Length: 139
Image 1 (spheres, rainbow, N blue to C red):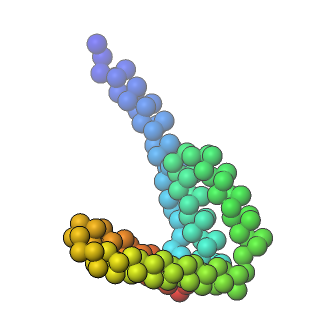
Image 2 (image 1 turned 45 degrees about the vertical axis):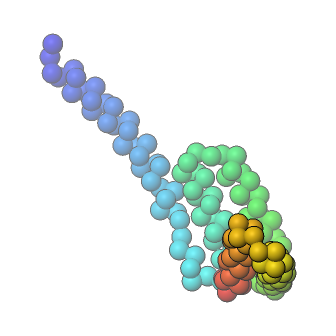
């Protein structure tokens, strides 16, 4: 058997693979750095990055949903409305932290260590959620 037919098949296969790789790499290049953006501009940037990732993964349903979300966001997002939503989220997280602190105090009064540990974990999770919401306000 000749080596030439095997090589020609290999080159033909490589010729098909190389363009496919470049198509998959293109959406990754479309991903932007959103860290310098604030408010609605940052929100749009993150959605656009999610669209590029969905394209790269061939997830057409997610891409379609994200395109709808981007369209709606562009039509309704204002910096003030976004700030208001984020402040509301912070208030909700603060209430959650308060509830978890009260729950922990009640459990400590009863003295069962396993329930104290569980309540402490829940409080720490609520505090982390509050911190995330406060960080989100700065974006």
